[in-house]
Length: 418
Picture 1 (tube, rainbow, N blue to C red):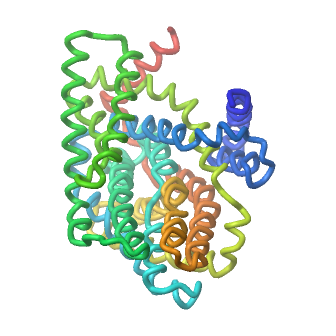
Picture 2: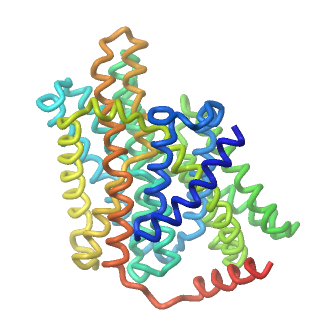
Picture 3: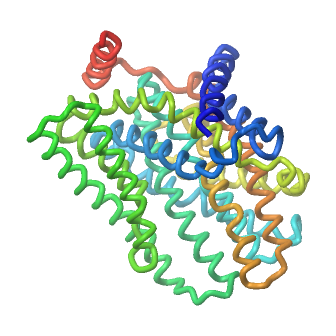
């Protein structure tokens, strides 16, 4: 397994460099590398590495969400908070409704099956969106209006909302006794509880770090370990108390930034170095999950429903931005940034198929849902990442550096000297 990982790391570095030279986001190349080397094309990735893929992707996702938290300032969130709430719900709902209506005529699904497909497709990919937004924040692009921060925060809450809706619908199709009212009430509970727990953990860590003053590397290791435990806690409490661990992880960084900017930026700089490794692991492993044969089975009808769903989503995103101080180009950037699908679709795309199989139902619709989910990754992750980076460079204005950016630059300089 370790040899296979080493090969992917070397090739990932090369592919990242080559794609950046072509002015294409490096993550596009890493996704394609994973697809080609994965079990469904050349099958060159060690089976042991694939078996550990879910855990590796989780760690990488935790790293990027922590980095996101350390970039979320109270001032910026206060300025864009209302838009975050709208973007967290409306685009996903409109896309899901569009897929629900279009699913029966285009894919011969029932309305419930089409609604499940809509919930699968409704989630934006934090693995694709968050790294790009952090890069724009570091470059000060769109910083004056808080645009990357708005997209970053909204994408995290969007996933919580969509996954809860998906769980309700899959429970219904599997014949389970689902308390729909409790599940829907669990959405705000999950969000609020996740943020509250994250803030509490962040405050406790800050006080411990302040008292014992461990090295930044040890602080990062403690934060990573606790973040993994928070994800575990979410799974353990899922049956009786909804809890959004990914929001809790972001909240840790947020509150530490509020309490001590120097400490927060020092930790963020260390996480940035870990991300060099984690980024390759995350995107190659996501790519390795893509079954091109399954995606091909979705055919033109699958591609059409994805495209029409994205049109509906784009309309919903644009609607959320009406009345804001964003200009036309900035609004188009947010619309584009809200399109990529990847991690959530890879994680839940096969859930309906499994539920139908366990319930003894015809698994044909489940296979269709999985095929369209995979096709959405193939079509939107590389193109969405590329379009987001290009549109960000074109339409987001670079703000003058603030004290925060100067501090980051100083820390980065010190790290290079070390």
